[in-house]
Amino acid sequence: MTALRKTFFLPVLGAVALAVFLHTLASTAWAVDSDGDGIPDGAEAAIGGDPMHKDIFIECDYMLHDLNGDDDADDPGEHTHKLKEAAVAELISIFALAPVSNPDATSGIVLHLDIDEALPEQRFLDFTSRANGDNFFDLKATHFDFASRAPYFHYCILAHNGSEEAGSSSGYSEIFGNDFIVSLGSWPDENGILIGSVKDQIGAFLHEVGHNHALDHGGGDLLPAAQRVKNHKPNYLSVMNYSFQMTGIDGQFDFSRAALPTLDETNLNEAAGILPATDRTRHFCRSTRKFVGKTGPANINWNCKPSSSNVRENINGDRNFLGQQLFTTLEGYDDWANLRYDFTTSPVYDASAGTGFGQHPRYFGGFRPSDTTAARGVDREQEAPFEEGRCAQFATANRLGKLFKIKAKEQNINPAHIGEACRSEN
Image (cartoon, rainbow, N blue to C red):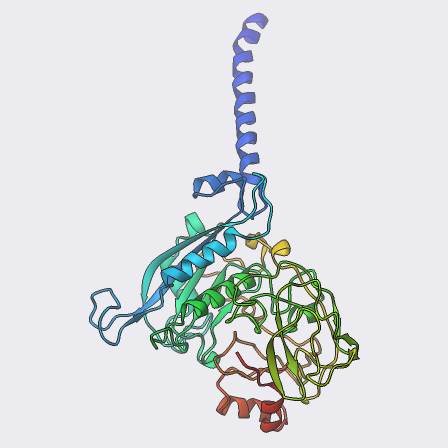
């Protein structure tokens, strides 16, 4: 009987052990992320990626202004916010040429753009407010397949305008997350249609994708919080910088490829400029109260005056609430080397429909001054309005008009003073 039992149970135990082994093997494949792109190997191959080469998957739905219901934008007065083919091709190329390594011994990232469904046009789209119709998460709940795509795909809506408060803003995004809006309904294209030019679409889309990967307007997570939001840094050659969002760096749209030397605005070496950079930059001149472009990378006349060696100059044009110049250090940042792909670990990751409604405004392109107090509150800084007024701690969300004056009055600041101090040129 004992021998019989041994003969009977050995095959059973062997089968159990094999099942456990196979389960462990499968679980490991789904847990391992060989290329570090935030997608487990087992899932990556299943959705059309390569476990040995970084992939980014983005589903985009687009608003369509269709007057006669024939599902196209070919009739008079109609338009579509679907990305132009030239913009899609350039975005794919930018990621393919990214200076990031992969286990397959090649560089670059494969960008998978699923330009999916047409959505009815509505003038404004907000992440959370329903004042002007459906909000972002209402539409995502209806049009996004959470069950099969939530852990792997970013989701975007190519909209007309962002929130009503944002006015002509070019977009709105979670800073380290998986959701974003591109809204170019105040930006004329090459034919005057309000859908944005090819360059506008490339710059705005790439900028919002950068936010999803934990980049802010001055860099990313490795920088102190105040440096991440510091805008217009001449030593930050990135589409995340408003100075280059819609124009590119020497005409080329890209994330920064190196952390350039720190600049001390109280002691700037004009001869060195931003070396070892090879591209030209833009910087703010107090003497003209304008940003000047195509300077550098060496022998940059930071103060726009007769040459000198070491100068004190507010080269990114930032000011405090009182309109006073800020003279600070400006740190460079290497974007490509520090993108965060693992958005499922983000505090705002929405694994299912309905989980996005409680997300904190900080993650929606928010701007929180480092010295925020209850009395001063927080200004949300929308992306690159077509006409803009900018300060380090003060931003308007509208063209230089009604909202500009209202917000200035709230802070007890002369609107004219702010207009002179903070206006920048795109």
